[in-house]
Structures are given as structure tokens and as C-alpha cells.
Length: 233
Image (cartoon, rainbow, N blue to C red; front, side, top):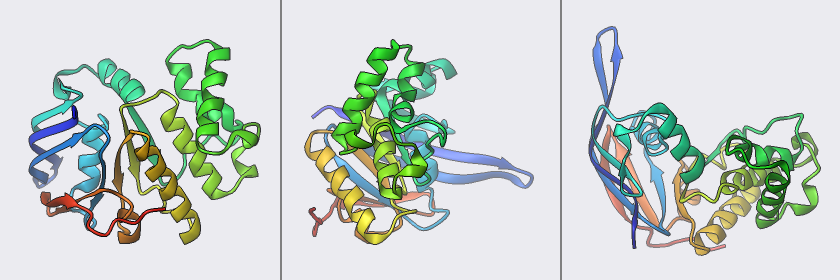
């Protein structure tokens, strides 16, 4: 299987008034096409910083990050934006939907930046909504659907550019247990269809849906292996 993600000795430090604050200390990590890993760790462990680097939202201080074989740190800001648009789908805890736009408009938004014609944008957005079971709600605004449906719409938006990788940061954090299980069942189904997934969570029950567990502590990757009692929908 081809590698979607590969990091070699990634470090990250942030400047402070007292000097540089190290957050990541030489992280080696790889993820092959079709894998599904959950990243866990306490607050301050470096997992969110690492996720931002994987998503091309931040750059490492040192080390090498390859996305689909391409060294990311050599890319310009415009090139990074292009890779985020075409290669990576993002799902966040807060849904990040535009309240005055209906779901099909929200899902189509990334295609606007891709400069596709209106008809093609709507066609692909509707297909993504149908993929997550929201076709009948395409004309509804976010306030007219449940939190779980809003997160499904956010997942549809992440899928609409047909990315190589989906990064989900605490995607069930605002949802009740039953709805969280429904969202994780959807992620499992998408992974079964071949989509590569990285999920950041602090909830063991959510992480148990993944095939692999990656754990951070004090800026180090301290555990990386298969989920032994994987939860299936």
C-alpha cells in the first residue's frame, strides 16, 4: 500500500517570552492508504500540534513531512492551500457550518475555491450528502437539523473534493453517546470504502472504532499499534 503520510524526526517549538517551548520531540510516523488510526493523549501531549502539521495548517520546526510522497515543508503558502483543498478533508468538533446557507451550499463551499461551475458544485455536493445519508435534507439550514446531522454535513463537506485523507479533530465532542456512535459508524463505513482516516479523540470508546491507536505523551509518540478489541457498528 502507498503511504499517504510519512514523518521523519518531526519537531515543533513555539517562541515564548522565556525562550522556545518544545511541543514535539522527533516524531516518526507513517500511514498507508486505507488505514484508520485514532490519536490519543492528554492535554499538552502534542497530538493537536501533530494533527495541524499533518493537515498542512502548520509547519514543523525540523524534520520531514511527506504527504503522498511530496515533502510538504518546501511548499509555498499557495501550494499548501492547494494541497489542503484537494488532498485533505477536515472535520471539526464544532461543525463549522455557515448558518444562513443550506446544507448543499455548505457542502459545496470547497468546490467554490476549486472554481468549478455552479451546476457541477451542486451535483457533487448532493452526491456527498447522499453518501452520508442526508440527501433529503439538502435544502435545510444547519439550525433545522440535529447536531448529528450537522456533523454528517460537515463530513460530506470533507468528502466533496474526494480527498486522499480525512482528518477529524474531536468530531464527537459536541454529541451525545448515541449520536457519537452513529457518527463513528459512518466513519467506519467510509473507511471500509477505502478512505484513509486520522481521528483525534480523548474518548476511548470513540478510539475503539479505529483499526490502529497512536498515543502521544509529552511530545513523544509512545504507543502505536492495532486496536485489539475493535468496536464494529
